[in-house]
Length: 530
Image 1 (spheres, rainbow, N blue to C red):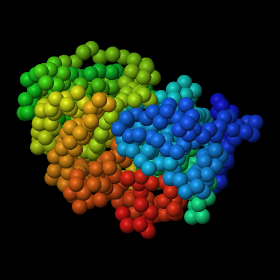
Image 2: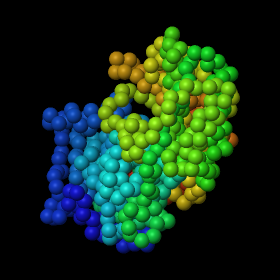
Image 3: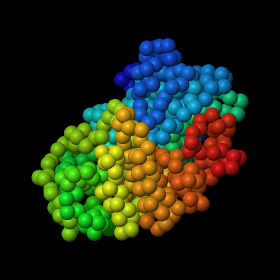
Image 4: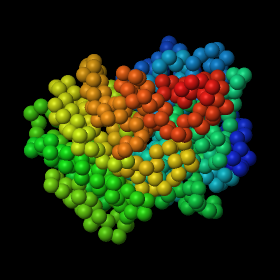
């Protein structure tokens, strides 16, 4: 039995890779609140419509359906399907593309389904889909001294993050968040149009699809059970990774002044080469994580430039030496300014590093890639040209972002989970952001040009092979399915799912035969041509 802080009791399910009917209520046998239907004439509608991070997208359904239990989700989906309405789901509201609002008549909002608890019967932690990562980190750590290797954006919710793979500062040491999915509860719609909830255990096809298959594809996830597949026993303090007691945090800073194309090329070469050499699963450097944040150069501002926040487990032998050696390797020939290193308790460091917000961050367009090796010098030159001459409109919002990856992530077989890319050492984000007063046209053109020219040799997109490993579905980019921007002849599905796509299509056909849950980059059922 699972008793959370709100008194919910978890439904049971047969083990051994089966999926069974799931139901849930509170200890008194009734939902805690809701369901609540909010239509445009309700004063709460405007608040819900604005609960999104990327203001480029608008959420304006016929109504929002706020839910607090799985039974309410089932009822909400049944109501929408019977009415012939298109239904989508929202947990944290951080989607890069307009998968939630585009054409949706009903948005099922999971913000109030945010419990984090330990299920003694299943021997696993249960995390509801609306729980933010920061809520999960806090509850898991203060309650049991454990955590998940999830992202640094604290306002992202578990619902979409985990099913897309999920990674963060601890992933080089502990793998992806999806690697810890023990079971998943999903509200699905059968061929007759009837919604029901199922629990899919480890080994089941629906479980597998939610270990990297991306959000909005198969149904509505209401909760996950999470446990290290290598763990034994039922002591909750041993069933998920234990974070470092303390971390050493440092930052390296480079200004644009004096940063020639040759020196910039060397900087990116240094950063990429270090990751190539230090991303094996048994490397002591799996305890280190960094990101290289390179904003576009503002006209007349030579002091602005690149910043590389970095942290390492302070308990690793020689941790400070390893950190300083990393700074030296990346700064070889292009020395940075490095302020004194600080020591912090782990959770304090999580909060200080978090990009954290469930608040609006303006209009933006992001594009992603996995890198199996460093950028080529030609790719670095493309970045330099775009970042140093972005144009006056884009100067405040263009960015290249490189993030540490690899390590234990790559110790899992590509077909063991739906996350197919298990050989990359870095992630790449190309980003443009702008204010509501700007129309965003120049920003969209800039980021599209940066991305397509970076991967010009493979048709403007990061086709798996060479130094590329495809793209990350949690950073979806609809341009990858647009022949104007993807001239590679390789479908978008290969970029995001590789050879795992065919299996995902079969699972889609089985569990969502009516294609109820769909969006611009949703998995197509196997009977529909991709």
